[in-house]
Image 1 (cartoon, rainbow, N blue to C red):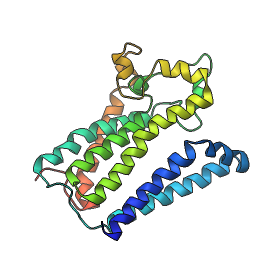
Image 2: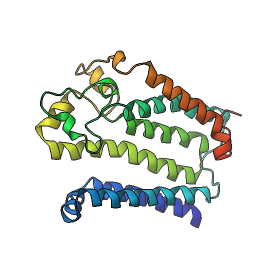
Image 3: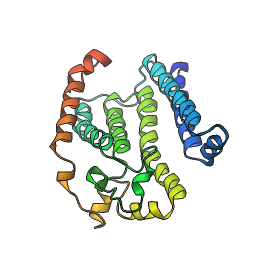
Image 4: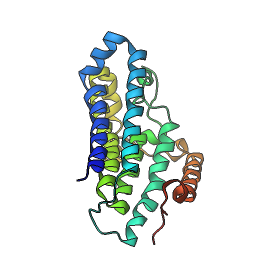
Amino acid sequence: MTGTIAHVAAAGLFLLITHFGISSTPLRGALVARVGEKPYLGAFSLVTVLAFWWLGASYANAPYEPVWLPAGWQAWVPILVVPVALFLIVAGLSTPNPTAVGQEKLLGEGQEPVRGILRVTRNPFLWGVGLWALAHIVPNGDLASLFLFGSLAALALVGSALIDIKLARRLGPAWDRYAARTSNIPFAAILAGRQSFVWREIGWRRVAAALVLYAAFLHLHRLVFGVSPFPT
């Protein structure tokens, strides 16, 4: 493994350690108690920006070291998966969610937090990011991409489980009631009969917004990233 690819691996590891080792452990509470909530969030946001910058910059300078041979069918994986991922991202960002930072109040007495996409998964945004990242590993097939997209997928999908653990510890019975009616894994609560799918709470506008984003990404992909997203 070349030194530049090692930088991608180190950057991905740094991103995961700073998130899982701080925000998902008692260290977060200790830091908040010492410096306050807002200063902590400001410092953590800065560290996150630096981690993503390091990951992106090291990936841009990494050589191509293939792990598997390229094939035309591999490009179909993100073409088919990314629209679903973008829909989850759009629906997740536009739906009030108790798992979002500062939104725990949605679990208060007398409120109904389980609506729309939250009936499908209580972490829609993270599942969208995770699916997007996993889908991009297949057509790239090189070592640097494995570290880049693999670390992003782990950040999102492992992070969704850790968020559940953290909120269960912090919110107690309020979280237990919410978790009993929802699921982290998409459609698990619906298939188990603990929830129902209500399309009108999601609506066509979110689908349209996701499709517009998807069309824009397809159109700009070669210009921005230098490669076509279509099978060749």
